[in-house]
Image (spheres, rainbow, N blue to C red):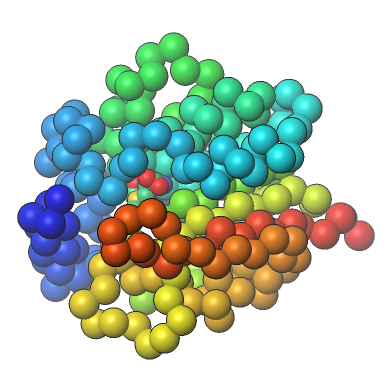
Length: 222
Ligand SMILES: C[S@@+](CC[C@H](N)C(=O)[O-])C[C@H]1O[C@@H](n2cnc3c(N)ncnc32)[C@H](O)[C@@H]1O
């Protein structure tokens, strides 16, 4: 795992040196060559906080959900199990191929798409938007841009769930990914959403890793 992370950081550095700091994701998944164990950041199970939220917030079947940077698809599959009609997208074609291979009978619509250039008809059209660990892996101004792009997917009264690593001090130059601080995640509010739930917690890793789990809602249409 440590070696895999070091290799990934090196890959990201190489792309940054070529002026494309967030261009390395397809190469990362292509190198895994279909082996899900090589995708070291994937837990290969749904996020337990998403499970809890879905249990506590049952929705009528057929609500529309979208999963940002869906990786290997565990959270998208969970949303489908809870009755959502799910679009799950990732910029990496190899990641999407792995999702389709893992879940050949899935009801999830797995798509290759770019958060910064998604179809216009997606805008403000989803009841639930789920973001886990995408913003934190991006660099520079793409981080704030990604928050706006994610927020824009929520329909009036739609909700955005955000799960990420967190920090409460300056950026550690060695950090990879770079955790979000409170001001950065507040970008979802600056993008026009209302914060309805905010949890700062330490996960169960050894040593524990600080995280945020936050829920936002778009106000009703005027
Ligand atoms: C750290 S991984 C997290 C994956 C998954 N959400 C999870 O929690 O396991 C970040 C994901 O975002 C995807 N990604 C990065 N930039 C993207 C973009 N511009 N549009 C869509 N997906 C992107 C990557 O390919 C990668 O699968």
